[in-house]
Amino acid sequence: MCRKIAIQGGKPLFGEIHISGAKNAAVAIIPATILANGVCRLENIPDIVDVMVQLDIVKGLGAGVRFINPTTVEIDTRHLSMDDPPFDLMRRLRASYYLIGALLGRYHKAEVAMPGGCNFGGVRPIDLHIKGFEALGAATSIREGGFVCVEAPEGLSGRSIFLDVVSVGATMNIMLAAVLAEGQTVIENAAKEPHIVDLANFLNAMGAQVMGAGTDVIKIHGVTSLHGCSYSIIPDQIEAGTYMAAVTATGGSLTLRNIIPRHLECISAKLVEMGAEVEYTDDTVRVSRSGPLQKTNIKTLPYPGFPTDMQPQLAVPLCLAEGASVITEGVWDSRYRYVDELRKMGADIHVDGKVAVVNGVGRLTGAPVTAYDLRAGAAMIIAGLVASGETTIDEIRHIERGYDNIVGKLQSVGAAIDYIECDPGTQETRNIG
Image (cartoon, rainbow, N blue to C red):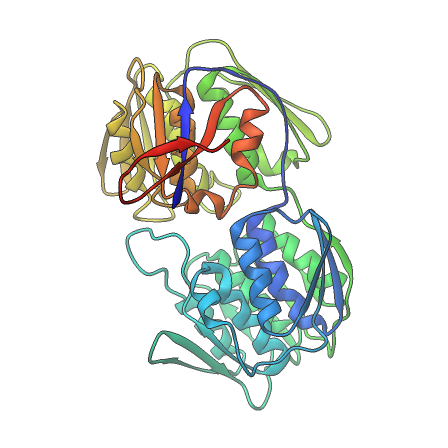
C-alpha cells in the first residue's frame, strides 16, 4: 500500500504554526556527535525521515540513541564499531556523506556508501569534499559498488583549502574532518548558510575551535579531543519560508513561531514585493495577504542570497500574479522538474536553461501531480492549496524527508488537506485520516 496527499484548494490560511528544527543543520550535527566520544544531548530535533535515517545510521555504527521527548535525543558515541557499517541506510540519504568527515576525523579512515537524496537530473558530486580531505592528508578512492573510501594512516594535518565553487556540503564536511586535525585549517570561499554556523557552534560546544563561520573564510585550530554537550538546533529557515509562501499564495494570515528573523530576510523581501505584509518580533513572524499578487523577479544565489530551496515554492504564487515574472536558478541546473506538474494545473511557465518565465494566469485547477523532490513536493502542496478542486500528490516520501508534520500543521490553520491510502495495483484511494 502507498500514501498520497489530497488537497481541496481555495481556502485561505489563518492561525499559528510552530517551526521545527532545521533539517540541514540536524543531518550534519548528528554525524558530528561521532567526534565527541561521549554523550551529546540534541534539542529541537525535527521529526522527519532524513533525521531518523541519520539517527539509525549512527545507531548502526554502535551509538546509543535515546529520545528524551519527541524533540530531544541523547546520542552516546563512546562505543562505536566500524565492523558492520549500515551501508543500505547510507544509500538512502544524501547527507550520509557527512559521516566521511566525522569518521575520518575520529578514526582517520572512513568507508561510506555513495549518498542518495533528491535527484536533480544527475549525480550530485562530492569532488570538493574529496579535494578537502586530500588537502588534509587523506587518500581517497571509489570502490566498486559505489563506496567512498578515505584513509589517513598518519593522521590529518591542517592546510589552507580554497573551494573552487561555494559548496555547503564541502564546507561542513571539511569542518568535521579538520576539528581534530593537527594544526590550523583555513577554508576559503566557504559557504555562509545558517546551518554552517549552527554546525560550528555545536562543534565549539564540544570543545572545538572554529572561527569565522558565516563568513567566506573559516579558520579551524585542531584540538586533541572533543567532549559531549547539550545543544539546541536552530529553527528551519526553509520550513518557515514554505509556510510564508503558502499564505502569500492562498491569502489569509499566519503567525510562525520559533524563527530567526535574519535568516528569513531574503525570503520576506520577495514576498513583500509580491504583495504580502510581513511583521517580525523577536522570534515570530506574521505574514498576511489580502490584495492581488504582484509579479517579481527571483535569482537564487548562495546565502545570504535567495535560497534555491525556496525557488519552487515561490513559483506558485507567481503563477497567479499579474504579468510575467522571471526566475533565474543560480545554484542547481536542474531545479525545474516541478514545472511540468504546475502546467498540469494550468500554469503558464516557459523554461530555457536556467531561466523560467512565469506568466500569471487567473487560476490553477486541481490535478494529480508528483513530488519529484523535496522542495518540488512543497510547491505541489502550495499549488494544491490555491487550486480549485482536488489535487492529489504522489511520491510524498520526498516531502516527508524534510517537513515535520506538514499535513497536520496545515490542517491546524484551515487547509483541507489529508492523507489518502492508495493501492498501486488498482490506483484506488481512500481517506485514512
